Image (cartoon, rainbow, N blue to C red; front, side):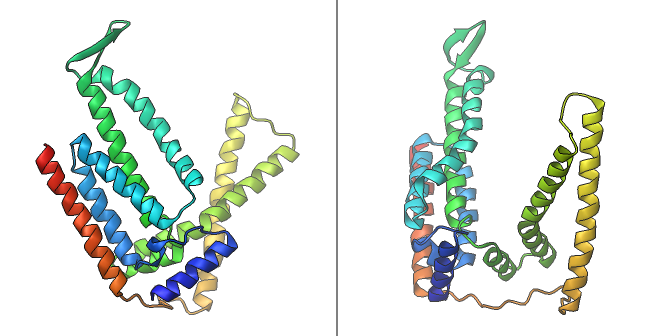
Length: 262
């Protein structure tokens, strides 16, 4: 199974769809999903800044093991951190406590600042772990892994169809916008613009419904009966069990550090 996943990861890398070739990519997808969920639950329950810093360091270690390109990954993280910075600027003025300074009659508190830092560390640790453990999966593999974890088939179908056709809807939107520009449409703050965008959204909904009906008919012609038939099976290897033991030990260490430093 690990060899098959390795071959799959290599193919995706060559096509440019996914750039990951580290040890994380060879771990069973089911194990990675459960590890990400467990990590998120543990980290959200932490409150010590020292323990949260260790959790963020663990996420950085997962990033290095996954061998994801650092610059694009950190750039995606920066998009979330822009909101975090805004929160860090506001929380000191909204949480009462020991004053730091006063600005235009509003007092900033140390408690608000530490609360903002706590939220920032938690968010960065959880999001980075999700990106390395789950975000590096090929969408079909993610759907198959969720199905093997006994997730409702309807939800798995919705996830896989959403991932597959969201880009199709985006291309349809770009075609309609291009057609509007060719006809001389220039957006502004007037009723004509609002009406035109309303027609655009309505047309996208109509075409989405028509496309969904064609897709359903094509799937029925190919024998689709509402069941997911897997072309590959997942099996735990010795490396997967080793990863579970190490990752479980790391989570236990975080809990012990939280109790010791509280």
